[in-house]
Image: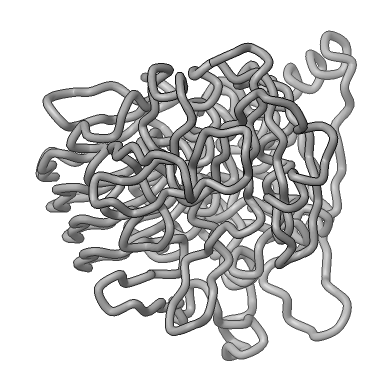
Length: 465
């Protein structure tokens, strides 16, 4: 492709997952293929063809596209954005623009298809079809009307709807998707696994399968064939994922069979039935005000408070040393922060409590030992005072709470706070949002005396590992 060649990206009509005529809040071009959003692959493909500048036309969801693409630097391209009203023809807009005048051909593309082009396909004007002779909407010409152009059938990826998306996942996993950039290591033929993923010895993997990073696969789970599991997902014991895509940060409960579905946190889109199911169990949607008042009170047992008091006294010399190091070496003081109390008992203004900390969890680097120094030792006094349990979900400030999704807020308010969390043990560094959501959802489901005992045992093991 000529270095001065223009590329026009018509992203004004980008489809969402839809069911029975209603759209879900998930644009198909942001669905993952081998660990990266489809749109990321699309832009990378264009950049590798030699494009240097993209004119991107947007209508609805403009902010999402601009936030993801930015200035195009990570693909080595420059970008200009053009906002048009819904229903306005981009081709007419380009035809009237002086910026696209001249004899130089333009590559036209959209966010529904990705034909597997090579530079040889861009020597002469052409429009590009799929192997099944479907029009991809991509063409290469200095004219805005591709109808008279010769057609070139190509292998093409498609995310026009959920069915096409799962077909694309299958094609790419079967190595029919062109030269896509893949995250993760191919452990064996057709099985890609990202960093930090944990698989129970009884887990069965049936190729082809792509599994992202920091995924937890439980006992007797079956993964595959032809499925993709996103980063930070948890597949609980006895569940099967077959010919499906589980998006980052999702939790699949025990003994479930997910077949021909797209799972996005609490929403399951069944492709065969063309319907979406939004989970309505207590994990996600029950309001704390709807529960029994007896369940609304945070109960920290006398035994837990006594053990915490004993440990706090025993480790007080270490804590004093850390306070000195924090003050005179790191030039930091003990921080008192106001956090949202959970559960919330009274209606109206949200109730807050004050806790002390040496570090924010978002600063985490160094795994369990880091947590023990900067969170656990001082946090013992929160247990002594009855503000938190040994195990639970992390406290959040009111500002942090407001930034959470509605489902996450409801999950938080119906949980119990603790100084040791699932994420503290799973991740060496502070994880991404979807991984946090998944770990908190998982903990909410399995919270019990026996599981908390196992969690503490894993914590102690991590200290001396």
